[in-house]
Image (spheres, one colour):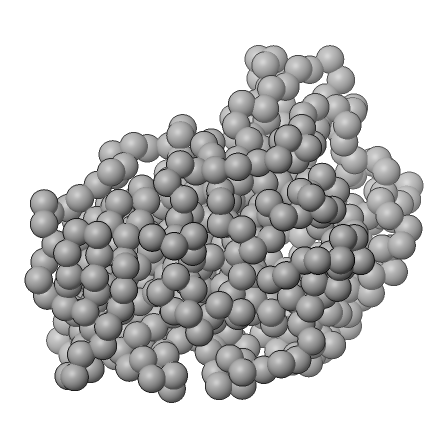
Length: 466
């Protein structure tokens, strides 16, 4: 297989290694079915959200539950979902002026409300199906240490507060605190202000495994270690899905392949590009030391750090851009699908993190980084996922849900709901127009995220190519 496929030995993620193991190396049936209604490629949050919305919803007589086969190249949920930062953090204020400038005030407000409601949906989902996934509603605290970024942070906050399309009760969730009040609120003291907003901590792998088990109980056929090698349309508008274990004929295909999309759909070669992120699990050695008051978002140039506190008093830290944004480490991160490797500089960045950033909290405590891992995100040039029907591109009965640009947890469930409605004809679910795949988006040559990354990296070494 080409280098566009998942690597066989990914770095060990805390979520996966310490999570439930009953679906690891799972094969619902010994052999693949010859024919099936729907094939879903990918067993992460995207594929699972589509399967769940197809199978767990009450179906009317007009919308009979389809037979569904899920194919995964490696073990279950071994991609970005099993390797992320363990939180659902909406944009809210964080990049609001940027999106107002990009898509207009009304659409920027729609993005806010979409993500605001998504947090509520996932909470309701865990309660409805009694899923134990460490779901913990919390507050996020954004800090800003670099004077060069003060204006940008404040501009985003006030653009959010002044957007007339956002309901006031939603605006009231977001609060700004200036010095000296900020020093009493934030456990990180180097910022002259901080901004608090709703978020949650979650064990993403547990959420997916629980949902997949419920889907299997309702007929889902899950096949791990079964990479899809090719997709070929038939004359009757169906698909032949060739895998390492044989070929399946199906009515419809859903590509929930995120960073690996170009392996099967080469038209996304320059539209969805893999970008690796690094995350570390930091475990206290002291007995019950307490936990951070907030989940944190530390704003730095180019790449920010995020910190997620969990009920077991541990914390998850992601980011570390200062350790990998420069050549040669940048080569290991951009346009690179090798999630088995972490540069030493990046690995070391997360050591002693609590003492460096929260000295009062960490005073007298000892911590160990028991897991540090990497995962492949999927970045798009316009920063929005590609979600929808590929018919306009000569691929009838093929659907895509991919390209979440490192921001999938507050978006994916509803995007999967929308795709499921296209697949079974129920038309359930709604997503922002800017997420939908269109001719304009596929063939746009506007300056975007990749151009920014290329220009930035060229400045540092002069040879970065996507």
